[in-house]
Length: 224
Image (cartoon, rainbow, N blue to C red; front, side):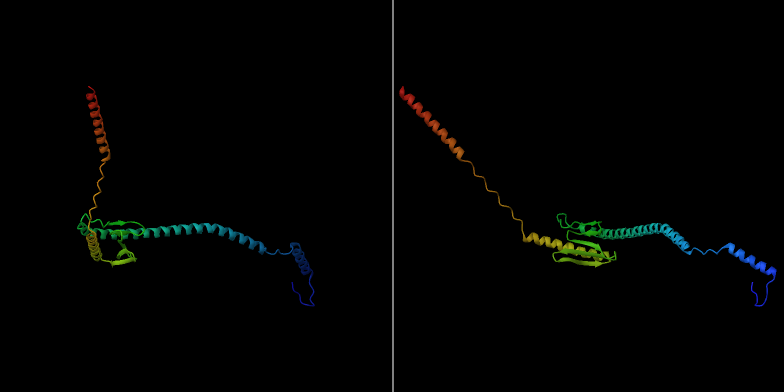
């Protein structure tokens, strides 16, 4: 209650003022807010929430990683299957060519190998693989100087022509090798010498025995 200087309070005003002062003292000081405890409680709650959230996020991340790995594996398998399918198409297109190869020519061993990198083998040194785009055929040969590319094309007919030329060259090389090194009959093994010593010994023994018998007979006849 504000009073101007020079003014006096009435009895009722003084009583009300004193009552207010006593009430205020009895109520005591106003407690301050415990901001530190509140902050610590908030930090604990935040830590608990973080611990609750982290495992959930890790599980989600692992699940997503597994899904992505499965998708990549599926893509790789699909690409490999596509490579094998294209090589099988080329292999079927080469059937008429290898049907004309004589049976006594054993230079070629054709077949599709389904490994990490599918290949269509023509022989032990030449094969067909798919290019990086998995659509182009690449006919390669391993030589003493490294691997060389004999043909490369998206067209099956072009690769068939290249394989045909390769097969013809290999057969000509085989014919030349056979002409350069003709088949030579191995020499006949020498005849084993006959064992004549034993027969001579037996013959001499028999002649000696006959001579002794004749001599004994002659001596007995002479005694008579």
